[in-house]
Image (cartoon, rainbow over all chains, first blue to last red):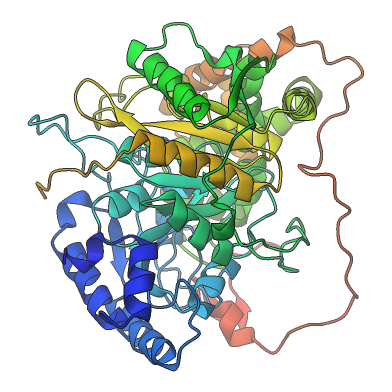
Length: 495
Length: 95
């Protein structure tokens, strides 16, 4: 039998239920793998005592029978989720030392189902970034390399620690969050599966807020089946989140029939960007052919406002962030700057925030402050919200015309080198989100599935976008794509 | 629209982030670059379009206006950088 930490959630579930091994065995295998993977910098706070206690409790539950699917499964948790008594600092110095007195709804759902917490995972500061280079903990390193070239690559961002940890088999699954692509882009860069559910499917309560109308949490895992299993536990109606949908959570795993005959797959022409690398274009065409081979009908569609999604996003998201991050004032939690003689409360705020927030977070707060300020609110913020309405309408129209799912590339390229974008402008870095950001603006579910490699052997992913609340259908399409692509690659271990 | 140094100073102050004088020119240039990217939005005809306020059409839930928890003062103060006599402490605000 291969090492336990390399199992999928589904395989581990079956093994646990058959008593082939225990959750304690599985947990120790993961803790050992994490111990040896310091070079990836994926886990930033370890919780072995909690993990062992939860594993023992899970084993008792498994012995009693009727344990839920995630019972005894070791997971990593993105640092953005508040976990009671465990450091939760959104990879920011401004939350250094913060230990929440409460548990986020998502993680509570996971623990209630018997899952095991291995620790907290690195990310971009406040989830603002596409390369995991804005973290106060330092960069995460992608377990994948360009063949024998030792150049360290980005795992993507913002859920870069989650992506690297799953790809390197440090945990069986991880939580991620996605505001503009932060689950799907790192999943594509590391050859794993990540789904952002419909806005409102998963509670945002206890998840450190970035842009509240865009943020959604979701699973980052090794297979589409694992995504179905883990999303089913993460999702719930939560009265503590006013935008949480009061809808039943279906059995997503049961939706994986593998049959998509007669389904209509839209190929949006606006996603064929100028200068798109040939390997991305080929990957996309191959993906469409795979779905067609499974009996789906491929339909050319148009989403005419696609071009305006990035600029609209980079108005709306910073605007919401500037408002959400106003709470970090050095009074109630986290860092407070050392004050000079005669400093008043304004100096306390200004020095605390200058010291606590990194450069990218400061930049976005200031952009948000500007677009919300008197005289510019209509010109920027309201205009962006109107364009957002048009982007959403584009999707509504294609779904109304009978499209079941939309196929696009997940990212404009494979993983790039850490530091390679250091001299690029912020806008060039923002282009990483070009295929994913529309989905957040429209509140739709989107999933990234690894389907191929670039010329240097790095994984590439495709994105499927589904109808609102139809994650089951979306996962089934992704399941067909996954089976047809047969992506089984793993990074060669160098760490 | 290009952001000048005075505007950058004003934005930093509104955001309550201390930015030293010598860093303001670079900040102004950076913010201008991002805002010029956003100028593309002016190409879109938004006549008659309502700004999107809700991601999915849903009525916000109401709840009874009652206390649901309380008596957790220690818990609330636990992470504060400066606590005195059961309160958050800040520099003098009123002379």
